[in-house]
Image 1 (cartoon, rainbow, N blue to C red):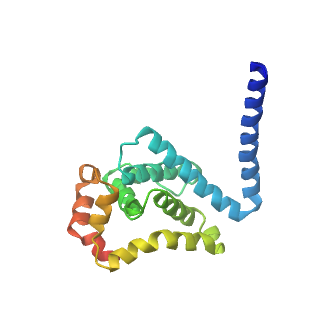
Image 2 (spheres, rainbow, N blue to C red):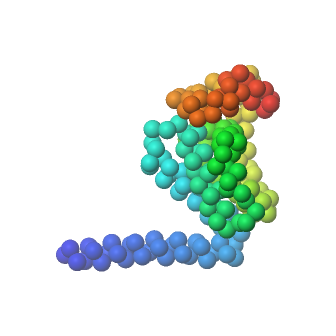
Image 3 (cartoon, helix red, strand yellow):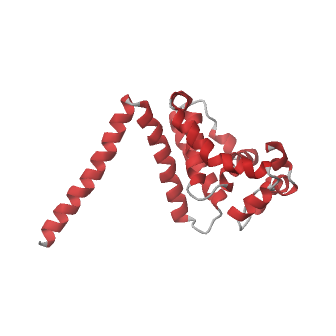
Length: 188
């Protein structure tokens, strides 16, 4: 096989991947379950990109960044969302608190749970139509609530998944609420 053949083969393979992506896009226009899976896949992609550029960050920081990226992208297509609300201190607090619970889950489960949350926010009709999304979320986050009901502290679970505790430097108020148990107590 010559170098030209290899180049042609690689070009063909890349075109096939592009074709698959285009095919998924068209299928999602007529199949709402596929649309739901595409929203989830995009969140995985955002998380992978965030992890690529900040692998040293705690999962919570990477999840918040991926979530913020999705909200920013959604803003481009929705006039109702005020992105400026997220660019201030209270917006940062919102991002951190909305991603706090999923950051306590194992790697893989954390982004899947966040992606399903995004699906629920963006296309609640799809989320409610297909029980598999709700069941998937329950399967991933249910064990966390069981641990809390058995008396484990949310702070200890959080610290085990986010050992650098970067939240302390980023938003001391959220950190104090987490460390003191106020957030965990609200979930019991």
